[in-house]
Image (cartoon, rainbow, N blue to C red):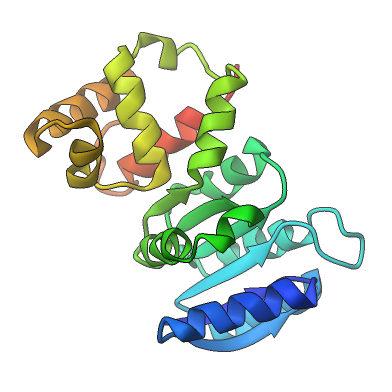
Length: 215
């Protein structure tokens, strides 16, 4: 894969470059500020980008804004966002176009190389990849909405794992259920969330978006 790495901290940026290259991928550009990030994404059109949320010049959400701006120009551009904190708004804004190819990981998870690279592959393939720690914190915070209240406990479990980016087969292995059973649960939860298959939107992305929304 051709990858852009956008992170203002040199040691972390260098570490991620070494990590992805060790897995046989090519880093085509790096960036240390929001404007540099947007320029690199539009110029190189990578297979996937790793982007820190907070970057200079203001160290607020420049990285996130650069990623959103790039996806407006290049719909579906795969981006894995990194953050030190759980902010569901970040992931929600990125997923809002329903195009997929989005991940949201905490920086601490980069140190789990296999998990991180697996997430990067899923994002590059047009899927979603939510950090398990993010999912856990959202659940513990009680984040929910009225539509989610219609789901059964099992459907909640399936949706949470779907938010992590797992396939039906992988969810079945995690929950010790058959793939066909998981397929029935996903069909049911899509219906309860009012998500129809219109041939244009990614239903799994829309379900994750519903999962992230609060009242």
